[in-house]
Length: 342
Image (cartoon, rainbow, N blue to C red; front, side):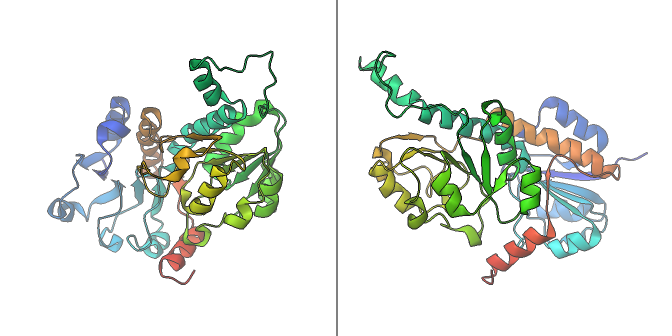
């Protein structure tokens, strides 16, 4: 019995970075893999198999009109975000029951781990004390640790409650921290069922000791955390910017951090690499990370793992369980925003 044809066209990702040999062998055992190279699949190669392909694994959608694939059942992207509605015809996908899946959940545990690490490093002054120790200026235990505090029992605030936030919530469980959430995409009932308290954005910023920015960027949330909201953050709080800097007025954030208004841990920036002359580099009470929360070996290899598991489910007529599934409501909003009507 012939195996279903699946296009493996992961560029910009490299096969060896996202698939272990075991997962790649499993992929070949369940499907007739077409292309399977690090370079982008040429249009001629694509045209030759369009009528037979049942799934496409892709770095980003560059495969033309989805209606030209009569047997297509799934699009599995390996970049970390769902394809733009300008590139992929979601209306046809939804009408035909074509699954559109994102590998974003593969990064959740790794990003959550770094967010957790930055929170502890900030509140316990790990980095600054390390540097002071090198200089012989360490604050030994017989001297008061001004501004140092633990995570235990502290009010946590999550801006966004997707897969990343749920991974972080698990890490915080031993610390018995109350968690409040701002996420306009989710109902209050759902959030309470998850053991968190829904609040408005201003309340979250004013009352959280640790503020984790975890929201997925969109046109509607560009710079939604503006200067006025940033100025409400208490001086003893820690602001942790883990998703795209898109959601924050970064210039205002820079000015407030240069004034030492509160502590921060930052992994993402408007321009990367961050220019050496950017003033935020001089801000006190800030721990910097170079956008390395998710794109590490373990997380990248997890992409191939969940892709193979969900592809196998789809090929057997079952529901995918590991990747993010494109929802019509979210896609409609993205399409409206990209057309300028959001």
